[in-house]
Image (cartoon, rainbow, N blue to C red; front, side, top):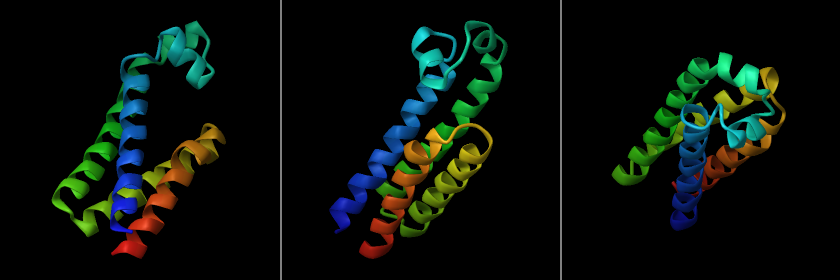
Length: 117
């Protein structure tokens, strides 16, 4: 079970690295606009805000990687909870898609970590 939990945590970390790339570097490209349903005008106007969001997603990924590398149960649980809370807020305020992209994987990984711990 420990291996499965680690794989799921790594997957959540990779999801957040991908979100970082989309928000920090691809926001105003066709790929970023398609991913977030943006018009070119809105993407250009909100690029700095998106980069800030991307940085926070990077912090979530870094915390999860730290927990994995150090095999730190507490840090892993803490950052998975952060992922879930951020995802719930995003679901309620931005897009329901976040529930499936962020909250569900985070919750599954958290359950696996708690069962393995």
